[in-house]
Structure formats: C-alpha cells, structure tokens
Length: 95
Image (cartoon, rainbow, N blue to C red):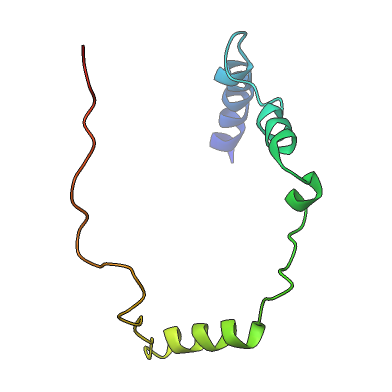
C-alpha cells in the first residue's frame, strides 16, 4: 500500500513532462480530418457509406462462403490478366 502512495506523486510529477504539450511539437488539431472532408466529393460519405445500386449481396456472400470453405473459383483464362511478372521498368533521365 505504501509503495502505491509513493508512486502516485511521481506519476503526478510526470504529467507536466508530456512531450506533446511542449510548444512547437505535434498537436492534434483535426486538420487532417478537415482536409479529407474538403477533398471528398460528398463529405456525408465519410460519415456513412453508400451502397451500389447494382450490388448483389447473395453473390458476395457466396464468394465469402467459398473462401471460408476453401472452394475458391479460379479466374477464367481469357480474363486478359497475366499472373507472370511484369517486365520493364522506367528509368529516370538525368541531365
């Protein structure tokens, strides 16, 4: 019990040593949230999502069910996507 009483004044003394309370350090002022709201086409979408008119919950649930039971369907071969690595890369030009 006495150790806890000795620890309490030490903890209270450390509250004045908060590194974020010092002048010139990072301070949360909600600027990132304000920037995100300004960039959003409809800021209400940040509060709650908007469903697609063409979404099919039955199809989505079936896909999740197949993933859980390890019966995932493979992609069709004519999908136009390649699973082999991509070649080439860009190079920066220096002058």
